[in-house]
Length: 280
Ligand SMILES: C[S@@+](CC[C@H](N)C(=O)[O-])C[C@H]1O[C@@H](n2cnc3c(N)ncnc32)[C@H](O)[C@@H]1O
Image 1 (cartoon, rainbow, N blue to C red):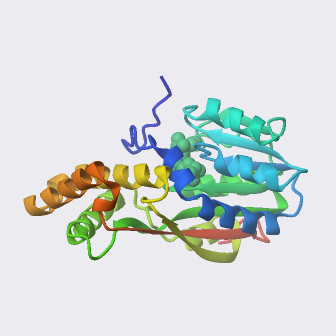
Image 2 (image 1 turned 45 degrees about the horizontal axis):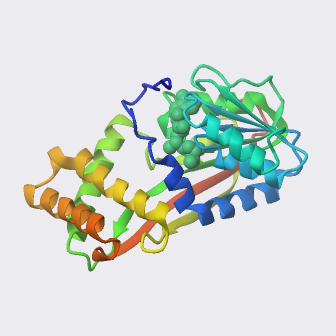
């Protein structure tokens, strides 16, 4: 059994991460190209909360002089990650490590030329402390990239009968997530800037996918709707719950029976080490 990371009762939330990664392949290419363009040639890069390793492998491919440390509190995806790294021809430069980054980052001080963290920092116990720790392990000319959700994903188009229910469920879920994870969709640029880094670029990426032409996107959108319904059930009017259940049913019968518009948005904050170790 993989180690369940328990900070937020997020058990099982990362099932389907692989579909999400595949569905948003274009988003990943955009982010990783941008990061690789600014990263120079770091000898060591680290991907925090690597999940399926899409960034660790993508960065290793784009930065042929770099070794990439792929860190996660759970080793759930490490078998697949290593196989994919081999297949991509970067197996010798991507290393997986199980570590809880709330306890420490498994690198010597001043050694990482690139620190990457996608959709990970809102899960940790103390994101500010983790950011300060990333500064400690970074070289003085390092690049930090933090990618986080800027706007909760919606998957139904406005003309779908269940769209109003989805909107209300997303609002209810957003409120709940902020209760347990105050930094979900949080002020990332400010947080990065307050914890040892100087923000040099903030870029918003749209995450879009088409469930009618892409199996991974179809599974991801369906899973998203099912989860949204379950997670917001106790805060949702019965009619909205029924409407969402109906959308899931329609989609299961025929993907085209739903009017899709998968639309989310992520923010990428790029930063360099602040000039003084203690910025405030
Ligand atoms: C939503 S997934 C994101 C995975 C990947 N970075 C991506 O963007 O697709 C969050 C990942 O962060 C990991 N994670 C959460 N808290 C962590 C911690 N304290 N230390 C290390 N990894 C953690 C989870 O195990 C999970 O794999």
